[in-house]
Image (tube, rainbow, N blue to C red):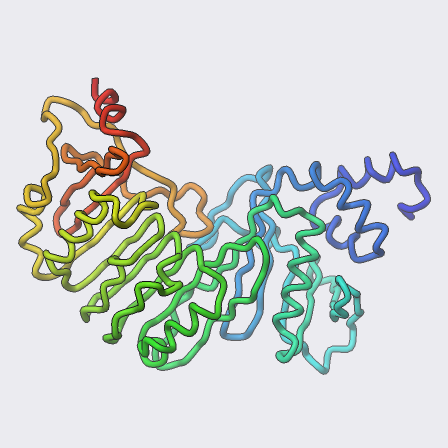
Length: 373
């Protein structure tokens, strides 16, 4: 079928009823065809929940998934609801022995593609020296075809053997949320390398750290603190205080020890409005020297809700599991709360075994207390 032979109205109707992968393949045919697809963008992209890039730093392969809201979710992967049927493109290192390739001009960039009967999706290739520009061209093409209202996510969270040195590849892409995982041992345990990596990379939305070696304190202005969601595991050693200058929304810290004075400081800085203005949720698990938690709520001046009242449950969506859109924080119901002086905002506080928990409500104290009536 030669689409260009049909009247414009018919062309548009056909495009509006094509699946997303076929639209992507069709967009490579010509500039005019791409423009036609872009003109139908609102209708063709309305069911797209997100486009997910999963990058494997071991072999440099990136798989792009298109998650369609109209499809039923199938949990097959520990981090996502993606299946092979959701793949719309793979981007790999160029195999110089590969002969069955064709070149397409994407926004002025010539890129090698392979199309195979074994895969229904295209496979793009890059040379190491040209890697970032290839990813940028591909992503900009996706923005043209599917629109910038779609959620774009980049995942590279897998822990690696600390004896091996892997620097995450974080390309500078527009409208993309980045999920980064780092093992702090060796190279990244040097605070200079750690700071240089984050200062030269786009701001990450979600960061997971496994701290296995002592590191000097970060600068208060570190770009690391701009992440919205941070999960830190320091199971053996006492790492730097990753909480003190945090400016994001949610933080989970599983640590060996945490000073009582530091924890009180965190609470007081939130109560005074001095810091943590964006905070939604905090979970600090202290494995050792945590006996002070038994009296901690009294020491921070937490207010008490009458035991006969049933407080509402606090949960917020979290991106610690970046691709699970139904993931929420630990359901928190507490009879203790604190109030921020600057705007009268309420936050639950509670201690459950070795965990200190904070859940910030989007309500003033008066609004919150009316929920108990």
